[in-house]
Length: 451
Image (cartoon, rainbow, N blue to C red; front, side, top):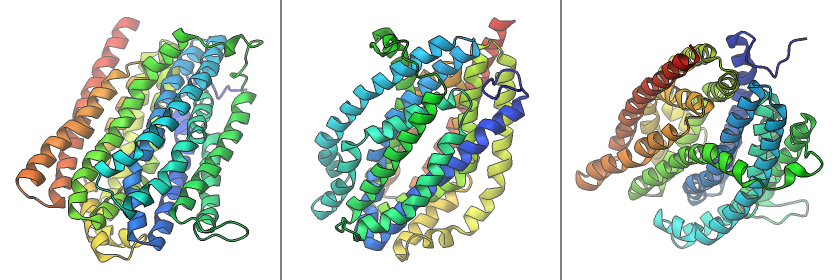
């Protein structure tokens, strides 16, 4: 029988589909989860959906760190499995969970202590600030649900299993359709919680998902404790996880920082503009979902083949992922531009919000494939245990370049929101070209060493 957890021998297109298709379906469901949150928040009032949009980059701090540790650990476990070192992969998995406990405690302290000044810096004050905190305080206090959801999935993903995470994301997206209105408006013994109810629904569903994935991860045998010896904290392994994971976290974090930068400038145009950008980016995520699985596939397949010393399969993986991404997203550019306003009206009836959001989506239609090139190239580099490029690219693309351009165009020249969206488009395509050049350079070096 073919071993579906070994990604180093079967045809590359087969293993990419094995990993990418369930991952894409799962992340699509996760985005629908977020869209449902946005739609129910919009039924409360515009301030609630603006608060939810403003909370997005703050919430991203948690997912950035959890996702980064998971990404780095997946690379380490995948490489160990590719070399046939199952005990090493198991030790890494157990140590990752211990590391996650420490990270979760630090995140809870940071979020509860510093959320108020962060939101104030973003422009929230008075009732607007209180609404933001009502959503984010439960998320930070119970962030362990999010962290362990990602970490248990890392164990499964290192073996090529993305179906389990898909199942969780599909189930929670469906359940969220019922929990959001129940927790917002109350009933059946629950008080009405408003926007805070959206947060508590998220916490409950993620906790349930983490329990399920923990059960599945335990069944793989990779969480074996070796009579308790694997539970003893190993600073050296923590260091390896941090070395691989924190650059990935910082890469994700730069996305959050990028949102901070954008919201810092968008908020100058009022709450309607902030709400529009928040809604439009969620629509953007839905459009990009079919290609998100390619990022997961590039990381997972590259990690195992890097460990197995097969760079020719890494090159083939990169080429197939980029080709599939072009097939999936380039045909969507025209429809996204043409139907930008109807898409915005699916979540809000506010004409000011619709106008600004549609303006963003029309520009974004020409940027979609650039995101694919960046994400696939970065994932392949992480799989080859070259995580630092992601940091420099993230800081340049998400923070430094936008801040400089936005300050010039909006702060000095008084341009409107269209200048922001055009700046983002130019930055994304420049980053895509640099990412593609660099991953090919690293791959040539790996092939030279293997020759």
